[in-house]
Image 1 (cartoon, rainbow, N blue to C red):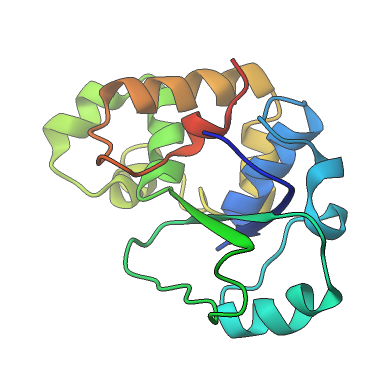
Image 2: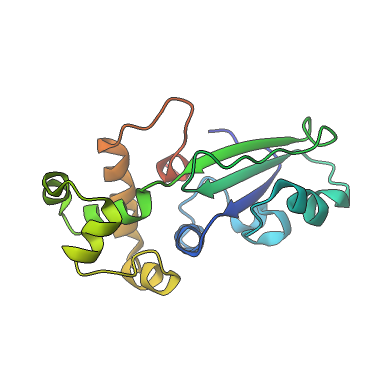
Length: 173
């Protein structure tokens, strides 16, 4: 994945933001915090609000908008004035956040046999009801190598759609 110019990293939820922050702090992503637009992760999900707040400042460089989200259906339609200056890359995490916990726990085979949704498996079988909370993610994945291993395992067994990106694609080699 090639990222040009400034990076506007937009995270849909707190868990996604916590994971990106952990990876940024450990310098394990293909971009750094210094490359981020205004030096921070953005929580704005609406394209119009994003334009108003961030794009009206007259950037000379191209901007890559990295949207970290768990829905394939959310549109992010920028106005024509910005189309040539902005690349939008969607990084889909559905149901990746819960799956990272399942892989880290070594429970993938049990999960597959259960027929449950990943979130339900985490709640009932792993007794972890808050896997998408910021505090849980930060504490649970404090060992960055465990997080990286879970992301890699998710990529190995997942059927990622063509032209779609996952967290794995943001990792440094």
